[in-house]
Length: 335
Length: 291
Image (cartoon, rainbow over all chains, first blue to last red; front, side):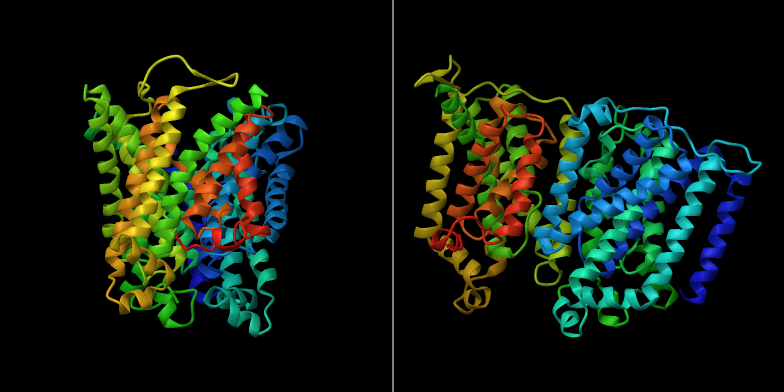
């Protein structure tokens, strides 16, 4: 974590703390969504941007965290303060178990395998009706209440989500500057060279996959706590894709890219959802798909460093995960 | 016995569609090195355009030709806009993201154009099911299998007996050597995507009467086709076709056991094959054919 990062995290924390004083409920809900998706997206930035392993199934870890914490809270009556970490741990454990075989695959194979795992997960949610209540889902998930004298609802959720989001952000910023970060970066540059340098690449890939699974699970558990209703529908391939788009649009070369991407996509989708029916009568969120698709392809082709890369270039300094300038510019380049 | 035959007929029909999608995957991958995640969307485009035109009163054969042409055009556009600027410049990860982006955009445009309601397409030759040794075989099934067989024969002829086909195979075998003998890999990339668009769309047109056509049918069909291609080793056209058929049969026989988990089965197979036999399940020249 550089001094700049510490300052930025501090400023962000202060802004979030003060947000309820000035922001409307709707604006707070946008900040909450940003925090939730940001947590999961930072995990993808570490996995895809740093170690260059792709996952098209992260919605499953998000959904797993959500379902585990939601089910424990409603069925077993356990306090949300315990079910939220339990959700994150469950996703972490599953990521560890499936990661070991799956991460032996590379490139397209890994992409398809993670995509397949995501679909298997959604099928199980739909079919294991006794446990998950199937496609109709379940509601009335008890919410964690903060021991603070504040108005409940959005403000409480905002503080809870961002407490976790800032912790994830700080941990990840520290991580990329420390020895694990260097190891992962080396693996991202060349697995063969890293192995020759004595790095156990399989172990490192599994560690970052497990961590990103845990992040997604934590985000999912917080999501369940926030929306208090779960059904399988949101945790499909489109959501995995959305998380990846957030990471790419924000910038795979920086942990901040996760937050920037999440915020950009949340605001963009919300704006579309609100204003589209005015331009195109009768349409609802349909343009979302086109937007996600075009944004992903165009960003990869034209601006592989994402918005953070764009901003860094504008500031004339490379705020980047990568040391070597050649790769710092183009995290998706052949090489 | 007739039950088994029934499942086999369903499996071969379904497997034929997977085989066509798998063939598209393998052709594009061999020539360009990219896995085209939009492969399934070509099937959707074929089915949806044909359905739309038939509903507008166009005779089926003309609608089918236009649908296939439309999807071929979409394949060509994907190459020109998405892959041509990226090939040789981006990592496999970057290529994956571009084709996923394209697939999502195509699906979104289909949603805007046609909405969420599925279209029905009348059977090519309406009539009661045919009786095959006690098993009732839908007439459309015969159309699917026969069409697939003809398409495969044509593609085989193209690959083996025409100059374009030889150039495609040259690119698949060795890009540098192909360039040295005057083959333009970019042009062949364009040909491979156009071809895979057309082949996928043919699958969509013949499939539409038995499954409904909807904007989101492409995702699952594309994934199943990919599973078929991986079963066949992702390197040979015959392997891909056999893999697709095998997956169709596997799913058909699993359906009576648990229809709900049927979609999960393909991915369990996928992961198992990739981990245990990354070169595909077939041995020898069959899997190593390089399209």
